[in-house]
Length: 173
Image (cartoon, rainbow, N blue to C red; front, side, top):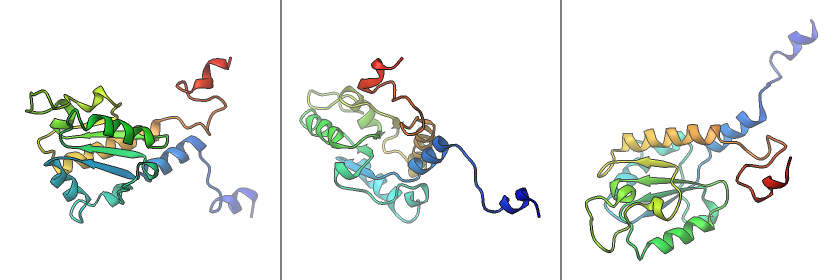
């Protein structure tokens, strides 16, 4: 029995960044920011028939400090925009935002003085899920695409340098 034969069943090799990406993609803690009719579709996605738990986004958190995925669902008024920004700022890094429904993406059919014409005017958005309301299958597809993006994103533990966006990155050669 050689050395290689003994290690076949007990050693796993891989890259640290891919392992961390895999772990981050399947451990999403979502914060639902539900304001309008798209909330019914969000509830159906969280229910047993579609089961977001299969995708690692099972339990919604109702505190921004415990969440890393902000799901903005429904129409956002201009009065509500500062609250949304405050909730976003209270979330820990890394954080992601999903814009759920056409009213959240572009204001929808509301063309008036009190509706925010897209949440990307006040916070950055990682994934857009269109529809009025979007079908649960579209929501799950958007979640899977977001998970692919999360897995590919760099992690500060995997490289010697910080992210490009960090304040200390200009000091490095």
